[in-house]
Image (cartoon, rainbow, N blue to C red; front, side):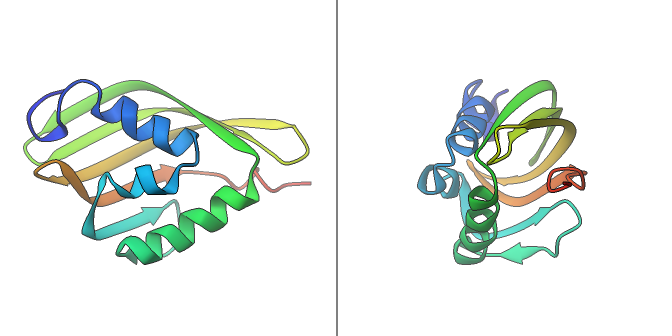
Length: 124
């Protein structure tokens, strides 16, 4: 990846921050006016709203691990797909496919959409 995405490590660094559940590092990738949508949840705007939404999600799981398999870039946009493995608090795991779409402004994400089905994550 190049240009607006800040080089080949940008996406790797983003997912490393997410997988470490490092909220401060994650928010550092986002513009102040970020619009963020996770799956079928309502979109939220701004760092505070994203921090609240994602902080709640991080608290609901023990861990997560992303594997990106494909990346597409265009002017002002990045799209990727792969798999994410969630670890539940009981130690069991669930792996599901995902696709993320990023709108970029300079080196920050200003639009972030996660396409994923996590309906089985909380199943008994």
